[in-house]
Length: 352
Image (cartoon, rainbow, N blue to C red; front, side):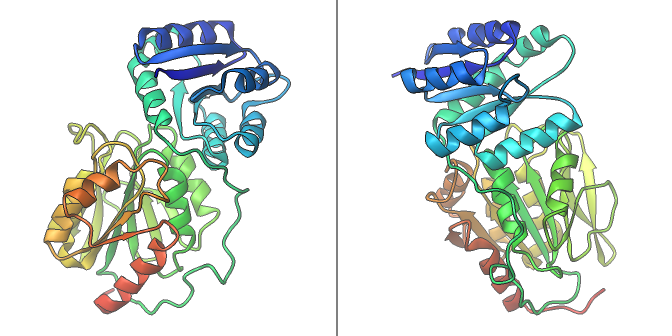
């Protein structure tokens, strides 16, 4: 059966371009193209699409409001069409919180050519979305004291945590970091996300979490109580400088099809930190991170994979589990506590 796709966008040009791209895919069927939320609602009920592409900026009822109502009433995989601006990035992150599974960046200039260049990306994202489990997320709030990992006996700087994710990962990473205590070990994060979005994502997490969250900066020292997100388009590696761990950014070749790559980050942790690191691989499509997580395990690291039931898409974790790279497979809700228990059991150091 072909993937039934509904396009929702107030621009006739965008609707035409997306329709043309979808028509090129043998495994997809365009069931409708709606210019606003009211028409889209009728088409959702009539055609029951497998995937919806949704513009954030629409008249009458904007994309975010439509998405919120949709995910409550009839959860459906949604790929957002977002502008490459700070405001667009903030709206996109809100859309992911509300349950959208992915997004496609839309430049403000020469949109026709840009979407033509992104045609394969759009097709790939729709295919991935069709395999995802849509879920409605409640409004964003910080966890209560009872849900946070509040009792944590650790000091020192020799322990590290690495987290990797792709599709569905922005919310999964948030759920993990929300439960990290303020003195958690330095944490490095690679989430597949284009440039222009990672800084806004870091700011959003920083406003919610007990730890400091920033976009990683080349050659900065990694400190406890902080998390560092790989900038879009840059690999994030961890290297040693004397007794310190340092962030190293690079724009060298893609690995496992990505830059930033989870494999690159995990392999650097295996090389420089040995069994002083903990690896966590969350929801995502493909295989990025599996080989790197195995390298960490072979160095004696504790390694965690998100389980299928709590994953938006069980791709990257499944590949890692099948390779024997995971020491534990946990639900997303249990991963933060398990990671902190392992860190405590590893023994707190005193190096500062």
